[in-house]
Length: 68
Image (cartoon, rainbow, N blue to C red; front, side):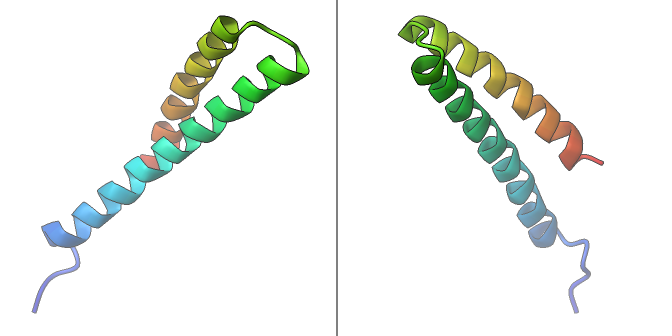
C-alpha cells in the first residue's frame, strides 16, 4: 500500500501551492491595474508598472503564507 507522503501526493500539493501563488498575484495585478487606469486616470505605462509591482509583492506574500 502506498504511503501518504509518496511523491505523487506531494506533487499535488506543490501544484496547489504554486497555483495559489499565481492566482493571488494575478488578482492583485488586475485589481491595481483597473484601479490605477480607470479610477485614478493614470497612464498605461504607470498602471502596468504598478500592476507588476503589486503582483510581485502579492506573490511573495502568498508564497510565505503557503509555506506556513
